[in-house]
Image (tube, rainbow, N blue to C red; front, side, top):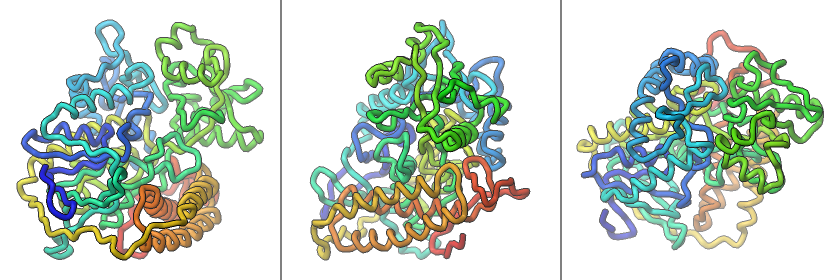
Length: 534
């Protein structure tokens, strides 16, 4: 990759994000293509914190058909069957590829050890103890670090995509991206023949979340501003069991605990999940999260409890070493104590609308992983299908880029970033206050249970704040916090408008004004440059 004038860089493929999706795409591209991988944080995104595993049909007693049907059921009628079949069918090949990259999945004798999680009818979750995300991230990091065509750029945050409209609307395509170098404070331009958005989800729009700080919906907001459609953003998955502890920031208690026999209990010890679903603790996540939310509100308690004390000490040490260590640090002995848990925003099921190659509405732009809406998850993501989706679509996008990149030229006529009319801000407190307000009203009004009144109240606040934020953005030099705030307000509005458009309760979207299922469900698709009527 060569540095050009005016802080411009040129590369064949620009990958925004270095989690499982981004690195899979980068590593699957032909070695003859130059690849730049940009990250906001060297530690990566959400992949590293995924405790559970990757779903795939491995056991002889399992079947592709069973995995497909389980996914369709969990998706509550909105999954695209063709997409589900495509992903599930490619799961075993994806596992083989991960093993080739050096991922050491836990084994039982000569075979993979398989666990079971909510929504799955069989044991089909491959895992690396209870730190699967760490194992995958580390293996892909190591492979990418020794690849001679991949160059990392850490501490860079994308601002907006560069769009080439020389051929008119029909020829609108992505030509690169403006990015902020967080180390220097300088805005630089990366020109590319293809751009891959692998920026993750937007769960930081909520006050309580299991996600790392970087999950601010950057890719969704950038894609929307550039002209991409988004779909099904009303479906925000709340993980049922995030640790409730004043010193535990966003620490997730893996669903695998319930998959291995853990019970959810009220403060008096009563199990409550059998009253909500036939699968009890192994019900789909939306059911479990609503049940916990219901019981907490009914009793006026701060949390419920997860109990796995009936398992042996040896079992806990071998299956959940990471969780056990963290809980011990916080003074909780999971071998003897119940674990206090609450729901927390966990996964963005909707996103930028893509095809089977991860391609978006814009030529040269791909979206893979949590930033995208593929049709796999429908109204509710089934556990451990997300890492699988990252691998399958990362490889698919790379394959499509390899086939078509010869048709894409790099144009160096993109205008340099102009900061001549802005000044440094001495009012950064505005950013932190607006950020806190957004996350608070999204949690209160656009959370697990919704109403039209709450949604409209949130929309009014969003639209007012959006004007304030845009004015701030237009007059002051960009900072990482301002970029994320600008993105999170866009995503918040898209989530609210999507929720208002759905006049039913389905999957992760539950509204008291429309408690029943619609007889004719469909995807909620929002189109840029069109007036969106709730």
